[in-house]
Length: 66
Image 1 (cartoon, rainbow, N blue to C red):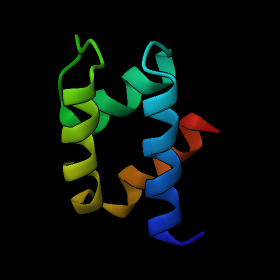
Image 2 (tube, rainbow, N blue to C red):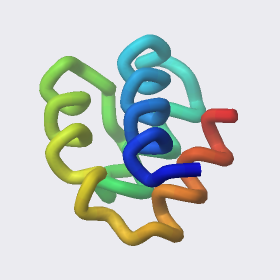
Image 3 (tube, rainbow, N blue to C red):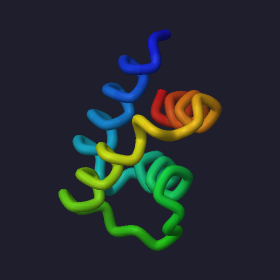
């Protein structure tokens, strides 16, 4: 699957399911904060940081949300 499509699906999932454990795992893996309350600000930060993440992290996050 194309990297851009994976990123789009991850961001959409996190934005729609801010309270889910999967979203918290994704944010922890990419942003590095284990106690995140996922807000619009966190989603914005994830949107900025995720495109620069390693492909292995994007692949892992994609599996987590699926």
